[in-house]
Length: 306
Image 1 (cartoon, rainbow, N blue to C red):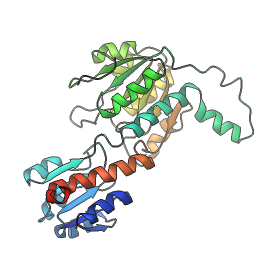
Image 2 (image 1 turned 90 degrees about the horizontal axis):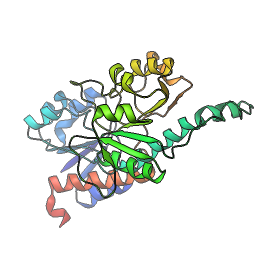
Image 3 (image 1 turned 180 degrees about the vertical axis):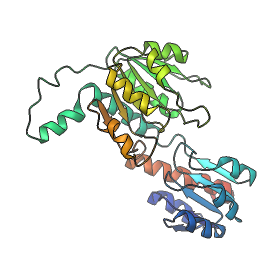
Image 4 (image 1 turned 45 degrees about the vertical axis):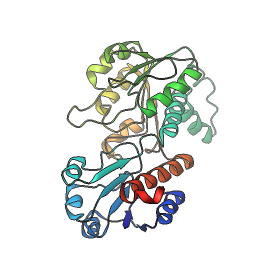
């Protein structure tokens, strides 16, 4: 059986596939090239760059599996895959620790002005007085919207900092540590920091918009390492300008790479940014590659894993 990998895979993941007797092609393709070639493959493995559209699925006459090395499935037409009876796989837990650590890192950066002091010290400045008014995470309240694999890892680390953790997640599953489960409205009004770890719902729109910002404490810090769109960027910029939001940290954007219109938010002095690298650690890539490879094998040739 033939596997097409368009966005790369870890060496361990590739080895697992070839050791199972699968033929692997690793190649980057344009959307038109993908449609033209997908009919030759039994499975496709992507990350976030490749879009597996209905056109791709319709052209995949031999396609049995669509696999994404990562959490979300927003670059895959899941409905079209279901209609074609093609299995859709992902790796929801493999990068959870990496994303959680980045979220905490951004919280620290914004709270202690690390993103600003780094730039100014490289210019030969010594901004000791300007950035001497940082705040601690200790005893602050962190609100987590979305308590899945990533949200839980953030909660564990926040508790280690001595924070009080609130969480809102309707399909909540019990955990082995204490987190106060509450409504979204109470979380918004009580939290000093708010971090989001949930998918973007195109029909519902942004989880955090002007209405939600109006409910928050003055001086709240917002962290989005989930998906562009879950926070209304225009409303966030307005809240930063008004002082309602003291700082924000963004790993994801509505457009990636961001458009010129998004530069005002990226360049804002109280915003710490990164280029959608939440799951991009060496350890996470190894876990993602191995996990997605094993899932593909289980779906295509389960006897190879016995």
